Length: 82
Image (cartoon, rainbow, N blue to C red; front, side, top):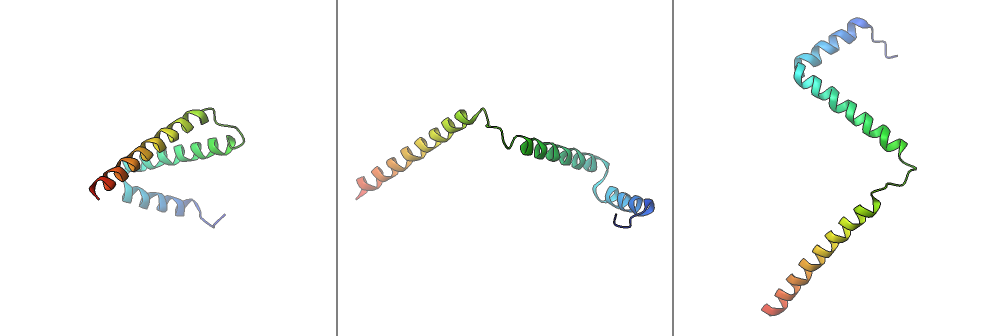
């Protein structure tokens, strides 16, 4: 593919192992695997409608209501000081 032979790949692997260490290399591999799995799930679920859409909308509405209440109270406090 890129002209890498077995010896070149072993040298690259040895350098990566020296830089990151065996524990960190294991964690990097696990994180990369989880990222690939998540990507595949997202791509396959692209056409499906999420079932938690209503719950997410409720959370957003609650956040907006809290933000509106905070804005209204700060506006009232500003008007009282004038």
